[in-house]
Length: 365
Image 1 (tube, rainbow, N blue to C red):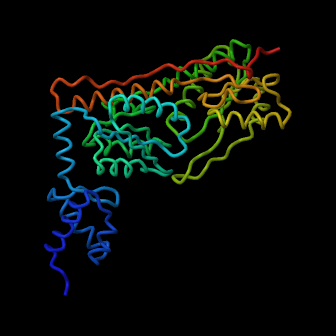
Image 2 (image 1 turned 90 degrees about the vertical axis):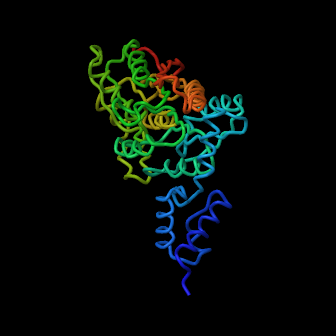
Image 3 (image 1 turned 45 degrees about the horizontal axis):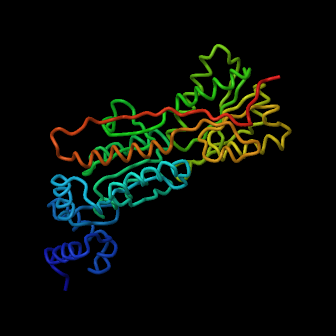
């Protein structure tokens, strides 16, 4: 005999309240109902405010309401948890994460690190899981490989129930996330540092190679193109991919042979993003008879491992650690101010990179 709907839904509520968080497929198996049936029950219970839905999980709204009330009354307490969500293969963000963690540790706040896999919308399930686990704030560095994937996240990020801050991401003016605390590097300025350094050394024909997997890559491509096009001393320039890490959301693009591009342009200088790609491209140039810096000066962008190359690479170094530190401080302040009428204004902080000159650049003969 089939179990009455109201009895089944009471069993769902009891299971979720007992565990705090339950997977939908586990509930379906325990109640011996289909996925369609369990999702219909959860939908109805969520509309009545008895459950909170996540990506494949459900949780009790009681714990979230109590946590928010306590946060409004007492600010940050020892043992509170902040979720940090970063993309897979995030070596560029390691320094930022370490400095952010130091800030949270000093405040007595625990860090729950969530790694978002490749693919569009991968951050949302991680954030939902973190909120279901009771996180009182979220520090995010979404992958955002393309403008479309970025815009697709604006709606749900703008309606988060807890304070959030962005790290190394800067939504455009007028977007739904414009009024969200954020800290990032001024990559336009970093691009200018690289071009001006090469021009001062006498290089007039340049090649730019950037990745295609992040907002930083898109900003760098646009900035380098704009700066070179407007520079009175740059005679000719070209852009190509340093590597394609498109992942699962689109097909990898073709990466042109850098040696061929250099020779077509007659270039004696190159800006390569990021460090690992720059080191590999320098090796390829050597195999093709192009020596660095004798035949071509190279500036890397990121400065994570650029100094370990042979030769050590001149590099633009964004203030990665300070980005993480300030982003964590902004998030903690926002958590403290939650629900306060005199909360501090939103901040959009932009930090300038610096140029570190090593052995991969020299004056033209």
